[in-house]
Amino acid sequence: MSSKFFAAAASGLAAFAVASGAFAQAAAPLAKAPAAPAAPAITHGAPIASLCVFSAGAVRGTSATGKALDARLKALQTTAESPLAAREKALQTKIDAFNAAAKTPAADINAREKQKADLELEQSALQRDAAHTQMELVATADAAQNTYSTELQPAVISAYQQKQCGVLLERSAVAIFNPAMDITPQIVAALDARGKAGSFQALERTKLTPQQAAQLAAQLQR
Image 1: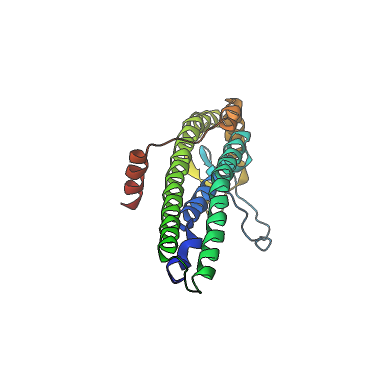
Image 2: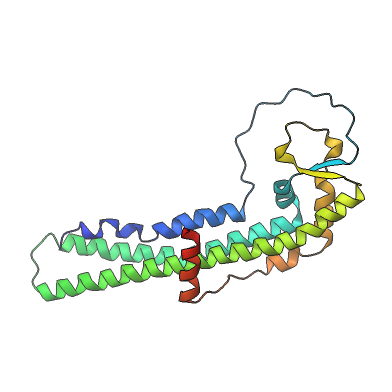
């Protein structure tokens, strides 16, 4: 048995790594960007009455609720990755040993072929479990985002009404604005006042049956 077959075995978690990256992005949507040059001082005109702006990303990144959610998602990802990474490392050790032994004639061809078949089965099981875990992490992030959105909406409405806004724009869609029109701090306060940070800290990973995981994977591929 040549080593070529197992050359890709070390990437048994390749699909999972891609999903982990996506999950990490969902768990920490406010990764720091490279520092930008200092902007020149701006003299703003008067705030436009009833026109307000806010940053959904800043609310998520500065509120206790958003921080609790992101920290929990990151912890769940780490917990999911650790056993898979350990299995991958152990499998790679076996593959390396098999490849080294394959360079010399086998005393028992049948035993070597059985060892090859066992490694193939182990590799397939690892890839299957990694893919299943991937879908559970995706489902967890989706459910958490839905719950967070449910909590965010009344907080936005509360701050909007308190400020007597007539229009509310996402801050990223506005090039320059008077900071007095930004109601992000009020939304953060209203969101945290709902007291849901603790429930996000207790978030558990969504469990899926193999059929549910396959259905979710199919949906993501559309």
